[in-house]
Length: 401
Image (cartoon, rainbow, N blue to C red):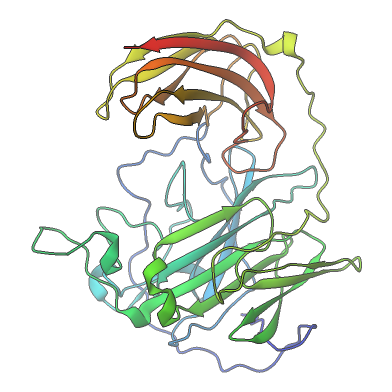
């Protein structure tokens, strides 16, 4: 397996690194059993034969199998990147930190493993005209096992603050040892990207990208001063974030990034989508999508909700488009002066009746909202447009007493 070494300086270069010692291989990691794959909703499902482990191997601070990346495309027109431990050309997890009964073996992902249909700590982007995707994620706290999506069968471990005092509650996940936490920054910088430079502990290091998507991966231990922030992750529609300060491209362009003062923090700037070729999609006019929107009150375990309904005039065939809605809360009380939002996150046929729900936060008053059609953006799970963006479908008003 090709190893991309991290070196100081503006140009990546290769050095000899001792191959990690192999460990035994156990049963594969399967998707959470409670989720049924849906090729027409959320992220969709992995297209058969599309998953490929990339030629990237980043040493773990404590040794063992290195960290790597796997790229795949989905039935909803997305390209996604997964991170995990890698061995014998397979991506997976290690039996530690509460995974597979701490058996110490390597457990590869099954070919269709995604971890979740609607959300996961992996970057996804809508495929462009040349089949390239862009996106990134900063994850502040991944167990050394590599398990990012716990389930009922593989609970993994947690930071102490995640669930408050552990006590003696049944089936409580164990607490991860502090030495087993990792910071991960990875993404798809595009076909033109050739190297990524980042700063850690005041030192600049440069790594080469791998694969046709310009993928990169940074794995760091969690510094003691950052344990209070464990468990957060930030998906981004473009490469960058965290300690990344520079991305170099084959066409000569260099993207310089400014980062926040705290070292190893999850927040940072992003670079433009260099090499992206937009798909020529027809943009609907207001008269194409306009449809009456009705609103009624419904019940939910967290209190009354507003359910809006309309007939979709334009169909949705992949994750590049969706119908989004917002409702403005404007009354007295906690959380009663805010904007609630939501989207369809699924394929929709033209002429199909669609519903969106908005929590009322137990607020009272007259609330107004709108539904819009949004398409052609890069964001995974479709565009998450703000007020006024997209093509207006219709408006609604409802009084909650």
